[in-house]
Length: 392
Image 1: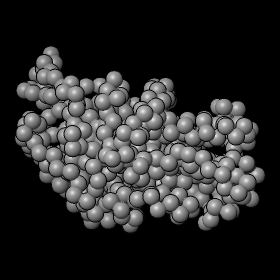
Image 2: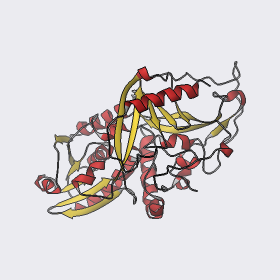
Image 3: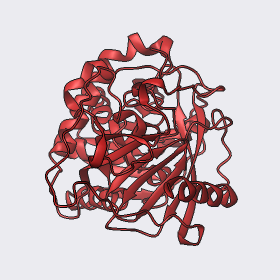
């Protein structure tokens, strides 16, 4: 298949970060979709709360640079002066999704140094999960970071479980496959254990993928300036619910061909606070500090460090294999009654407790683009386009 990642393989265009995968979960690569009998209800159909898509409801426009590596995440240990450095970065659009499994693998390397005190560089998704797993293994952990949540780049993600969103290019997929599956299954199990917790840090939601023509006839071009990405969905097909094609009165979007899918969502604002509280509650320490050169790490007291600096590793460690992938989202005023995701043409919407996250997907010009300047006009135009499409 000439398609991209875990959820993307369903045949809808690739997107940035997590949003790309909205479309995907709707169309299973294994053909495990089905026709659904309309539910027995008084009005004969399913009704959803409408999306209030207006530019004057935009509360913020956010950009970030996701750290993509053609070979996939860098999870390896090197000796640097007197320190052992375990690298844990380069996850593309899968940082939150793979964070627990990736950090498990990084910690496994760190524990071979037999230390009881560990330093973690970075306080985003990978840094926090690395630190928490180390604490649970009995280590004393200190995080060093230039920024803390909510100011870290991880906070600008869309919040969907997309474990192979821009995770590696197609040529490197065979080498990464086994490692990726271990990361994915471990992360999935961790997230399942968080379902039902107060504040709903993690929960399953339903989404709808809409097409103006029958799905079997729809074309799905890739993004012209991006590589073909690795596809791993077959190996974890048992972890995802099947998608369902909705027809007749059960279709809440009768002007479109519609598929319903289910996907895990992270309410990132609350989830990140929960991780921080857990880390501090277990005696963790945080030092706000910026590093401009690896030699500065030699002055830290911990003999073993986990480097979870994400895109920052490109400058700090001179890693030119890290390719920035720009992503921009607009956040609309929350609509608690809208608890479903949408994928329609080049627009993706994710409902979260802190707002509706709107993003354009399939953009050219985002790959190898480190510009993090928000473009509000583009987001306003996108929201207006969503409103027009939903008028049908």
